[in-house]
Length: 98
Image (cartoon, rainbow, N blue to C red; front, side, top):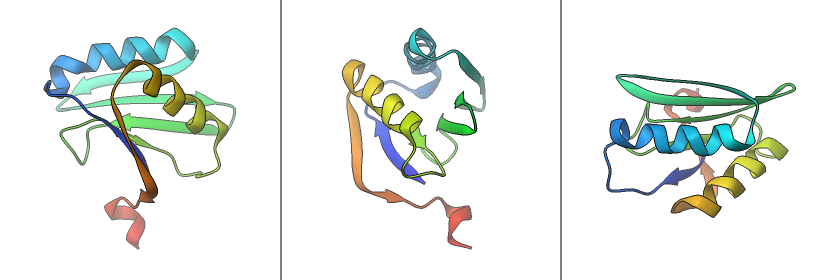
């Protein structure tokens, strides 16, 4: 489910490092990469938040658990540092319709 998107005029290739550095400042278990799309995985215990550009030209904040404390922490951090469009209801990804 998509809970938010980062609003920027920059192409995600140029903006990837900014987002990655913000996330790595606060969270310890982070994996990321830039290969055709940008992706960042933030993990804590059994919880995972994904920030990626797989279905958009903007970075989207995704999580399978709508009650995730990690999701709240990631959105809170991003909201402090960047312009964020937070959706009132999570948006299902294409694969979640089935």
